[in-house]
Length: 249
Ligand SMILES: [Zn+2]
Image (cartoon, rainbow, N blue to C red; front, side, top):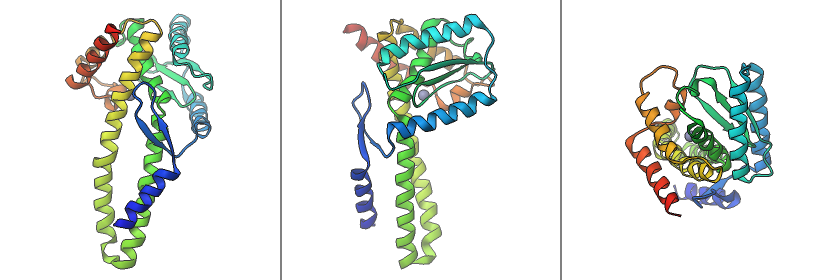
């Protein structure tokens, strides 16, 4: 077991450390921003080749206008920003590494005004700014490395335990590492997102209203965003606190 920890430590030191914007949280990132951007660009191309771009000029202009304001606030010259409105009833939006933002038409009913749309877009852009995708992939690589080494060690000393080790390890990894991480990424994206909104000149109170809308929509079909963005009292409470803190400044 000690060897596993030593290897894990080595991984952490070899990997480059990063710092998330706004929160200052330290991150382990085994991927360079350019590798990440290349991945983002190819996924974006792939997505667009299958997606139906909206022909609604007014709504598309609205998305691009909000997006450009947030992009200026984000101050990332290395990003090649693009904003697209896609015809799809799902309530969803995303931002890929490098600044490719997609908003689904399904979210237009839920986001009641520009400030609420800016809430969703800022949140998604925050995930990309904080390199959450690269961080998740880095954690995956580390846990796979540890599992491989664990298999070698267990296999060499007690081959009959290999399966039990894999089962126990898989369970522990998912609950212990994956879940808290994705939740902390969500909270971090909320925090960075509200900062971005304010910097871009939007009414940050609407962030609370947007998440309240999300909560009341719970259980309705086609809410893709909801499955990856659970809205509970705790989340709304945290966003309200961030809004209050920012107001005092
Ligand atoms: Zn999110």
